[in-house]
Image (cartoon, rainbow, N blue to C red; front, side):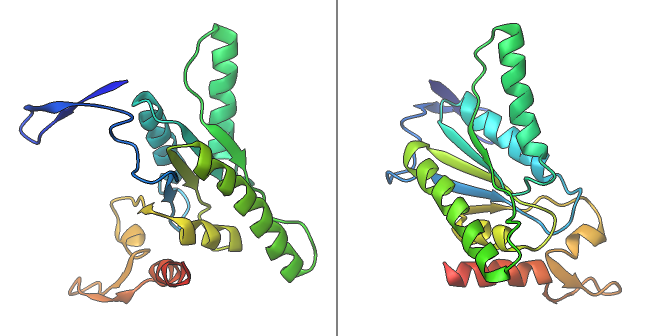
Length: 194
C-alpha cells in the first residue's frame, strides 16, 4: 500500500509504502493510550489510531487493558459484525481483551495478570507492525504493565485544568508547574522499571 506524505505547507514529500515505514526491528512498535482520568478520549483515540495504521497497510494488534469497560473490544466486535453483515473486507486488528484477575490472593492475581498480558503481547509483537493498548482511567497492575512496555505513550486530555492536572500539578494563580502529577510519577516509575 502506498501512502502520500505531505509537508507542513501541503507540498508532496514523496510516496512511501507500509513496508518502507515498518519499524526497523522485527518487533512491533507498542503504543499505549493512557491517562488515569476517565472520559479523556483514550478509547476513541485508540480506535482512530488503529484504523489509520491499518488503512496505511500495517498489521495492527490491539489489547484492551480496560476490558471491564470494554469500549475498544466492543468497537472491534462491531466492526467485525459490520463486515460480516455487509460482506465487506474492512481490516480488523488482531484484538484481545485482558481482564483483571479474579483470584483472591493479590500476589497470585498479579502473576495471573502478568502471564495473560505477556502471552498476548508476546504473540502480537512478533506478528504485527504495531500494537495499540487502551488503558483504563484508573491505576491498576495491568495498566502499569502496559505503560512499562510503551515505545510511545499517548495521553489524551480535554481542554481543562482538571485534565491538565493529570500531567502536572499546576498553581492556579501563577499557572506555574509545581511538580509532576500522580499519573506522571507512575509513568516515570514504569519507564524506570523497563
